[in-house]
Image 1 (cartoon, rainbow, N blue to C red):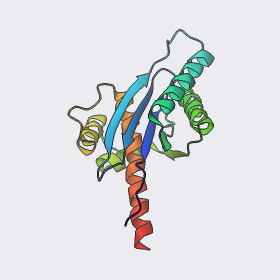
Image 2 (image 1 turned 90 degrees about the vertical axis):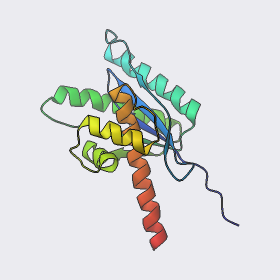
Image 3 (image 1 turned 180 degrees about the horizontal axis):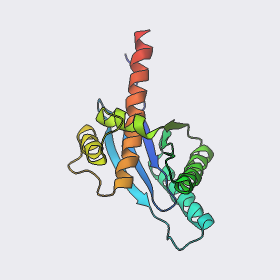
Length: 172
């Protein structure tokens, strides 16, 4: 008799104050599968604190609906635009708070690690990542929105890392 393992449900987040992508995958079978993905897009005319409140509320609804076992969130890429990186950081903090208040563990992944996990190359183009994501999650079509696609990629990155850790633990 083998112990039944509860399926992992992973919520991936691509944070932003204008668009926060979210994607949910499951590890119930031998291969990860996409359950749902979408974008939270607060009205741009709202003050920042209202947009963050909207993101927090919507993520709470997503968590209640899908009951994930873990949240994986993309770390901000800090390039030349510091203001943009700060805004991503604010949305990321709100997502982490929503997960923490729901009792979810949170894992953090750098953009290059996400791309490498999904496409095999940390500097891959978005189109390449989307196509590999579609294939690995058994989707007929990739998500139309890049933010939702990126969120699924974050979730898939966690699944790949989770699977690798389990294999290493079993080898000991």
